[in-house]
Image (tube, rainbow, N blue to C red; front, side, top):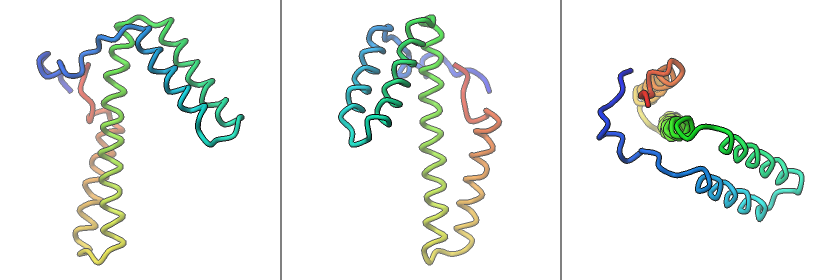
Amino acid sequence: MIKPDKEKLVADEFILDKSEMNSIFSGVASHWKRDDLSMLQNAGYVTNMELIKTAVKFNDTKVLAHLYFSIIQAVEQIQTLNSLKKSWIDSKNSEENENITKQFHHIYSIQLDKIKSGEAFIKN
């Protein structure tokens, strides 16, 4: 897939520095510590967040910018695929026309194939 014009990417331009990113990750870790999970489960969350903070510390800012862009796209694709699957399942469980259920399944399958092939993502 081709790279879009620069002005189309302005909203997703990555300008945070490493300390700002790590502040966000520290905040997430603090939030997780307040959760209702066991100490062992919380330790797993917090340990993973510390690994992410270490990765931020040792990576180039340009790499982090590309990573951020890819994460945003991945989250958008997860939301799209989840919504399509929910519509497909809801249509199966309701009194919808069987053809509508097939259409939702077909659209879901097409999107899943695009995600798997990488076609659903734009170059950053």
